Image (cartoon, rainbow, N blue to C red; front, side):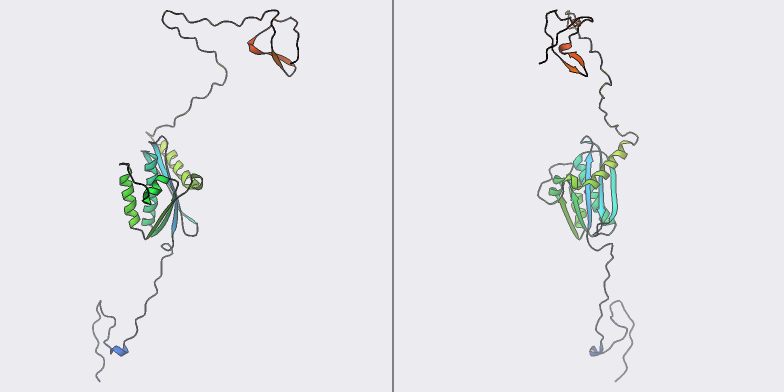
Length: 247
């Protein structure tokens, strides 16, 4: 029997020599090692808000690995936007992070019931401003191997809420950003009432000075720290005697 004939290896040959079928070695499968960064699910809590709706807006997100370790914090100012726009921006930020860092499976928690149910297909997206964001979210979700989204109450989304507020705080300090509205404080001391405005030819009424009570008038009052305080704004001249009857 002639010796085996050597052949030139090609991309499609399984061996460099031609051997009889009964002598061909069984193919061995090389073990597939999965990148730890790509295994399992990552979890994201996201939130968005606007001060004024529309107003200065931002979103925040806290992203953790499958063991609960924080791997990223997202916080971005969005300019003058609505609250729902900011909520969707938070979701898009989480999706993009997963795609950019090769995490194929993502679970998202949001306190926006509207957005969650729209992504789940339970609510329709009727707002023209939200439809492009919804469609972009669906496109990014389709690139993942696994995706889940659920709703949580706001008190269970504190970290994402904090990051969203930090984004809005930073944005409102930028040049050209609207300043926060400040309430007018109460005066530190009592002020005299304004002078009444006269209407037409009718003169403004003069401020009447408190009149002294009649000699036989009965007054009421109360005591505090041994001093009698008269009710009703009445005053008594100095040096007179009064009779006090306890009620």
